[in-house]
Image (spheres, rainbow, N blue to C red):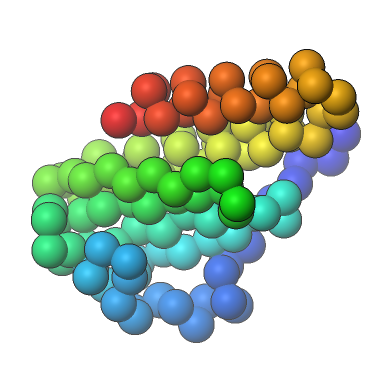
Length: 111
C-alpha cells in the first residue's frame, strides 16, 4: 500500500496565526484520512504545544518547554496517528474496537 502523506493545513495559511492554545502556529498539517496536528510556540500554558485530533473522534494536547523535544514528538505523534488512521478503515465491529483501543493507547503513550 502506498504511504498516505500529510499536507499543509489550509495550504499553509494558518502558519504564523494564533492557534487553539493561543500561541503562534509553527507547523500545521492535515491527513487525508481526516486528522490534524499543530505545533504552536509561546502558548498561554507553556513555551510549546502540540494539538492533534481525529475529526469527530478525539482531540489531544501536549505541552513542552523545549523546542527540540516538541519537534521530535510532533514527528513521532504524526507517524503514530498515521498508523492509527489506517486501523480506522478496517471494516466491521472488530475494526472499530481496534481503532478505539488504539485511540486510548495513543493518548496514554503521549500524555
